Length: 255
Image (cartoon, rainbow, N blue to C red):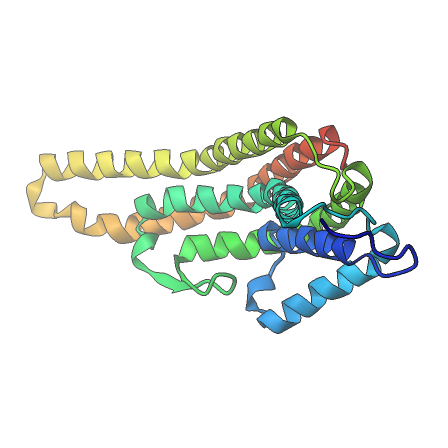
């Protein structure tokens, strides 16, 4: 059994709970370039944000190590939940780019993703950079800060929260990501399918032309042309995904 700390002392457990929630948020939130920063700098940034929230640190004291572990797991899940709801917006563009990259032939060319430091296709990297720009242009950075600030009021650290509503919010965000990503990729995939059928029929009619050798560069050029035409639609799709994420946070009392 742990003893109560002095009323005027520093609420150590409250500091730990808020720090875990902040860390969970930054792990899942789509902050551009966050993983390119050194780990020590990220940890210092999380500590600085936690210290700035000192007036709202809870003074609840767990009755043992088991209860403290339960509280910290709950806080980490809450921070991850807020980050994932916002992260689905960027994942919509990545899912759409990955769906069309194989059909267009861009999956054979890979580059280093500056966020994950992993090999990614050219279209995926382009979608990641576009999502990074739209993250700030659409005001999702303000939404992330506002949602976290209100989560401390709606769900004080150590008080617990209802998981069913969060599961529904994550399910809605995932469904919107798949739907909007497919709607973004289907025009390109449909056009490339028609291109393959046309070249196959032409080669069947006149075998000496060897048109299938032209399929690879032709499909890449057509995909780039369609993507350029769909640039305004991409912004609209991102705004639609952002509206779904903000509505989910609003239903949770964090909007």
